[in-house]
Length: 85
Image (cartoon, rainbow, N blue to C red; front, side, top):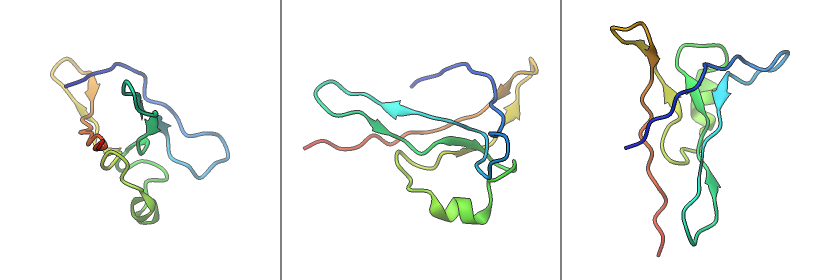
């Protein structure tokens, strides 16, 4: 299990790319690799075309934001790590 705190990013100005967070995995003895970006369901740029174009590196990066009892926005992203022979 992992957690991290961040601010919710905004889309880049004058771009078609949705607001996103980059994630990568670094394991001892293996090259680092990127996962699909974390993006926010229902927001600008998360279209059906975007969904179809995902590479699913580590699973889908599309998350749904939900507000907890304290008013903090939370999202869950399950990650599938690559298998190493």
